[in-house]
Image (cartoon, rainbow, N blue to C red):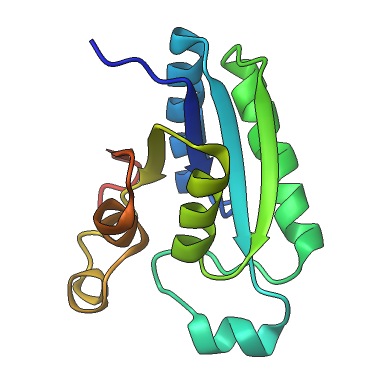
Amino acid sequence: MATYSTIVVGTDGSESSLLAVRRAAAMASAFGARLVIGCAYYKDSTEAVRAARVDSRTVVGDDPAQQNLDVARGVAEEEGVTDIVTEITAGSPVDALMAIVTRHGADLLVVGNRGINSLTGRLLGSVPADVARQSDCDVMIVHTVTA
């Protein structure tokens, strides 16, 4: 049976992403793993507009990113996780998650399924599909959106 020692999950502050955080936290609690919660942000609105994705909420500035992480930490603590690291990273959600996975040597990345079944997601890619293709560790895609 596989065990995980470091689990990374991303949040953009949406309800969907917090469901993924809750699932990752439950797994971290069960495995006694470290949970790393990351939030990508764009430094300014110009950068955000150029890189806007329809499958994730755009976070502009590090203050909103930190607020998202504070909420996500609370969700993880509700699941009984005691070893929690939070990290904000500038850039696109995919690039930020991949950097966080690498920095922490994660063996599991958890993401929600938002965008994966949309027309835009099928044509242009989605965060869950893109990280699944790029990741060197296991990826769990959590069913957080039904439509």
